[in-house]
Length: 259
Ligand SMILES: [Zn+2]
View (cartoon, rainbow, N blue to C red):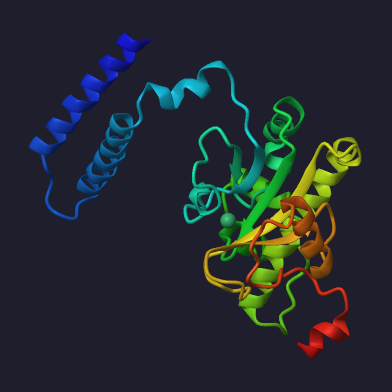
């Protein structure tokens, strides 16, 4: 195996040299691709140089992730936003629209076989899958259509601002996915072996909780802001620093209107 990998490394190094020797005119598609591949290999080489065998020791026997994460494939969403050291911590399931339906086996594996005590579903602002599913996607490829059909979103209200409706769709999808998880893993949740969190990664500060925040909007089906706050206090042993109020649905509309 090592020999094979070493062989691949040599071929890759040789290809890299050949690519440099045959550089295309600046800005060409080929040059762009060469840059992408070179960056990937350079970054991996740097990673391999700086991570010695001790680093991989915990990985040798088996994986013991702390959480199963269902999130979108979107390139703007990555684990370093919510875990400084995600290696070995997070069992990642990614697809367009952060769905359970299109990755059921993977999600079940994380919860039922790896026994993660937490399942977190992370949607994100400006999700292209949500926007597509809210509109006419009949002209898209059949395989993409199939993955959009499993999104259950409320009808877009044409009277409302388009951006607001988009964000409402993102939230609604997270709530829906949490509901699906709660039905699927009802026993685990009932017996206290699993907590399901729904959150939105907000890189636009659309929810006014701070840019880059992971905004929790659902804990085990509870969506009002006071339940989320008490749920987070309980889940963190009150160890979390909340400098903004959670952005769940207000428990009392009158109170919310007064703010
Ligand atoms: Zn997305």
